[in-house]
Length: 281
Image (tube, one colour):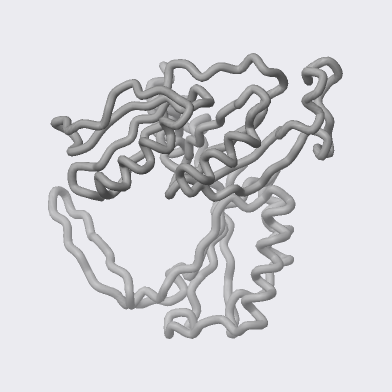
């Protein structure tokens, strides 16, 4: 079950008094324990209500009121979202929490509604489906897609090529014989033991992952990497460097979407679209 754990405001938190270094370290240690136990899913501290606003609803009317707000004991200074087996487990964790305030304080535990709680009012599951779609969109909004290229035994050569052609910055490089968990027997082509199992490199602001793969049969098909550069001179330098040993699929030329655009396939058979953005960004 999920619970929201509410740290109630106190006179000191409403006055904007920041926690001491000792308290911050203690709370940091407590949060670390929550994370390691798989309990903590989110948590933040809130600024005093003097920085906040309230919106009052009355029919179709909305009235906005500036903070600060009266009745400190009804205000919130911070919160966590926890995943626990029971309310009793949440209580156990709260009892272990350092006092979050320099003065007396209260922490409130409130179970979070789950869709199963509304089953009686959603007999056909339409609301549950809608909720699931919202959750899926939320999860993908914070996701990141990173290209992963398999170079069929030529990864080290490719890293060196992109370093010289595009100024790529090489990050982690791990070979198969350095892996703490060796690949299953028969998966790795003979002679690939010292090939690169995993590497990453960065071109501009884009990170690309790379590997030799487990054999020499990988092929690049059905995609290209788009490389956007600020000036035509930059685009031509990159285009010519990528074309060395490769093939020009479309020479650099002006198009309606870019003042300088072309396509090239490098010597590792990776397809690129090189362009200057119309606004130079």
